[in-house]
Image (cartoon, rainbow, N blue to C red; front, side, top):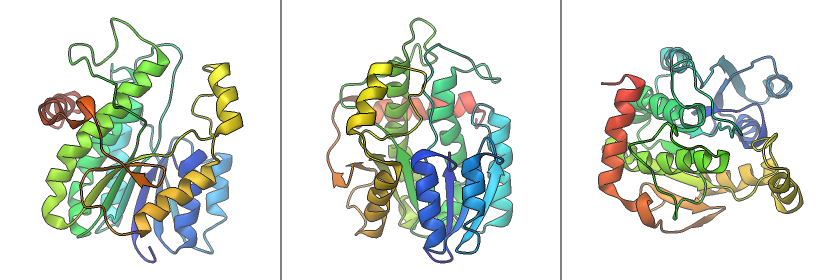
Length: 272
């Protein structure tokens, strides 16, 4: 990664912080998109500047205008993006809407990353062999209700999070097609249960379980970097659970659903 450009969302905590730190130590030019550039995690990244180049870019994934502004900052200063890690995520116990009038979990976890990936598409193509990583979860049994993408009829934090992760997997198919001629690969990475702040304030039982059996963010980041350092996967998009590639099932393999979601997402974020 020495001298190559990486872009990571949510890079000041959890897996994102561990990944950004490791990439900086490898000599990458790391652009960290984060909501609070003054956080403790941001200060930890700033301390790495002697080992690698780290740039903090303010980006609130709950505001599409903020995503556009952050993407412009990256595009204006980087001729190519070699690695894009769509990592940031939230899980809200109660349904909330963003400033854009969209369900917050679906926007932060999926739609804003969909927009960011598309806005950086030209820079990813310029890298000739870029890698895009979407942080996801097991989605084999999950389905999207295209008539209720904003969870207005019913909402639960686990279901909302799972649907946003399925959307990332489906969008990876179309993104892979858009990048196919450049040698780029799109990966969907499920790190397993990880001891991070994602489920703070939600289910105490779930949090207690993760605290006991979950991996550390550093372990999850090391697994991701091992995948990226290995031979490129034959398929794109490819799904990895920890370091093992495995096939997808259910709606995640539905090409028609992927196209429908891509078209709807484009309209929701104002790309069409």
